Image 1 (cartoon, one colour):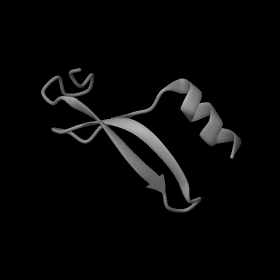
Image 2 (cartoon, one colour):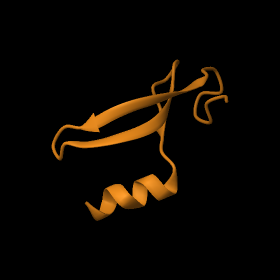
Image 3 (spheres, rainbow, N blue to C red):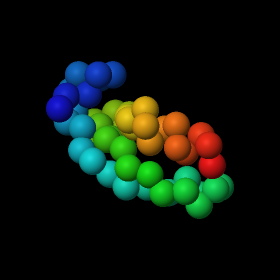
Length: 49
């Protein structure tokens, strides 16, 4: 999947942690510009925490 922001890099699935809250998440990150995309279901569950 190509990046929507820079149209150069490929989006790769990554796992991360929001350090302030200790919440783990999965997202797609562009190898070129670093843009991250999360799905709405996961974003909603993170917002509730």
